Image (cartoon, rainbow, N blue to C red):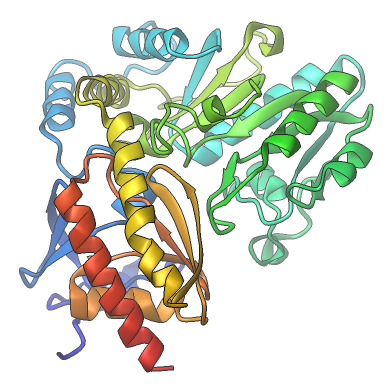
Length: 401
């Protein structure tokens, strides 16, 4: 089968007018429905990327489409100078299903993390604390504050010097964490499952130690659940499957079913912001919040968190054969957030082979790591088909090395 290439002139047009920041794959996607997308040549793909863990309801879910259309015909944007009901209702909904007391809405995950970092500095400022501790290999976004928290020099080096006051420790190293958290620490910022870093869950022991270290010095424990939240791991928050409760959590990605939004949720004791300390013009706009409300409603009524647990378990069970055959070295993660460690460094090659020859979209976070983050709506038959196509792609990629 010949290599698939986009039939449109999108690549050439994009190269002329867009800043060259993306290594795009050579297909132009036109439409999507459920777990499937279609390119401009009419080819269909089973999508296990879902907008990078964004499309929790799949593509073009009617509940989100209807909520957006209805709200757009009513009120699109008035800024945060005024009250709007969709924003208020979404805040109430998130608070009611969580241990948090207050919400702040942004347009993206990195903005949610920026808000969290500012909150931590504001909270710690009363005692002169300003340092943020995060993890080597973590990913928290690409704006300057969240980039400084991101523990990956590859992302950071071209933009040095970054804002000071950030320290990084090895994931799951309790002794190093305890030694690094001091009276100068205003926050510990963690992903409960490191996403871009390769889908590595933190241990309960490490999370308990982080909670204890923060309590010891009066720092905030902030969890970045931008990728793990909104039901992806089988509970609304990933931390619900651990023994700890953070002081704050950030959300984005799946919160509005594909419409841009981010959120910072905070317990009352950590709500240090005063009037004028932070703000956003578009954050929490009525359209995004209406989409968020519709998304949460579908997650509840269709029991999609249970589906995430069931389909995740189905995937893990089906992938056991590839582990036994030595094609995969490890399968890790929870629910519908899985990382597959390939025995040979064929992950990136497998992405291309799966796309071009098997009609399957997957994502590589490294030379040996494939990330699967499909819609929470994926069905049992689609999981079986995905594993069949993935197995064939890995075989083809392995034989080519």
